[in-house]
Image (cartoon, rainbow, N blue to C red; front, side, top):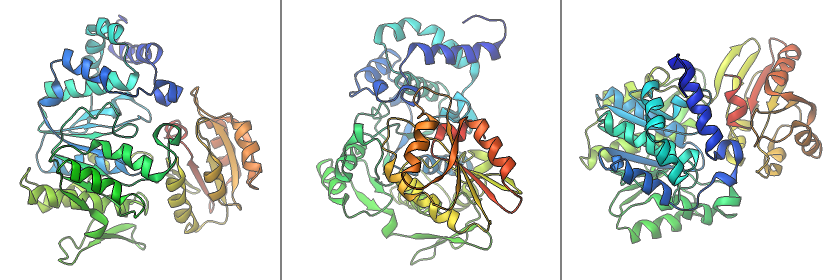
Length: 432
């Protein structure tokens, strides 16, 4: 923990946390803590930093990371000192904790872990629990005006759920982590609804008949106002320019110049716009129209949307798309049907603690697959993945490491063809 180089110390400190603390992304359900005891204890010992800044709390099955990034970018453009907590990270731990788009100061991170090693040893938190506490302390010390906080898993028992935000957002509900959150949409919704707080307004991104009663009951019990973004506006993709157009009855925003990151962003942009409108209406903070438009326009400069239809090359097309559950893959298949390429090459990997069957059913049968295994213990073996895929007539081979699968795809793909890297955040993280 004490090498001469700060850079070396930074990575050694991260490795220390990886080694000492259970991490869901690497180990799976064994790292999931089913109460908030550890996080509350950590925050109390750190002086309850979560009480020192305003926040917006975001949960949901898909889209919450995109919504977080857009909101952070808009708030930055509005002149607010903005904290952002997201997980997991793709390449650099600093992606998890940012102030005004800049990753957490490495020296601060090193000194925090060194200073609190006794506390870590005493409480024995998970990796996620200590990083949440670290983020809250960092935001408090940096005196942010507002922090955008993304839940990790679920909501009710998620470590981030010790804050009292000025607004809660639930993007949508889909099947993911059923072994931890429940095997029906209402059960999953009930876990996500756990972020709804007393008298804190809650915005639901998408109207879904199967789960709305869950949110309505929870909001009523918490005396919280509830709105549904998809009933208030609509965003559409301009196919010719890969941009988005927003329309409501009042036509408040007729032009949006945001870089294209997939057609599914239509829903997320609408959720963000409805959030900003409601925040202004309630006088929680003030965000002008220019800040909203500039925040979306400059998203890739302020808070880059990593792994969301991220184009890495054009001849052939190489696209990184971190879709990793049923709804995410469903949206991906819609997009790739519109690709004007003669042949599709898909580099695909996943994790072993998920039921992959529904996803394999959806994947296109006419693509060539390169099954891979990400470099983490939780990853599904590529040979096992190949066996499962063969049951659904998906043609391809097992290539082991992600770089081997991508290398093979690059060799096989012609300039007018496309390579899609997908199935897992961790697969995408190894190639971007």
